Length: 72
Image (cartoon, rainbow, N blue to C red; front, side):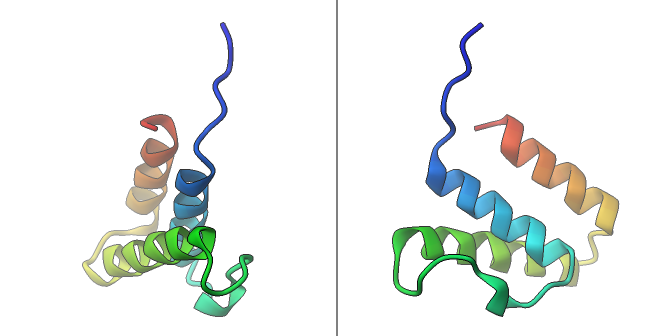
């Protein structure tokens, strides 16, 4: 079975989400400011933070992050 390349923007989003659920700072964004990749990473980071603030526990967030990877 062939592996399809994942959408780099989606991967960026997932990485941002994963960083946020680890409690790491927004300042660790690996992308240059004002780029499409930074935008998607930031969206993921914000969603991860919101999930944490909404009461999701770490294992639930990790499961969601895993589903984000698999479902794309």
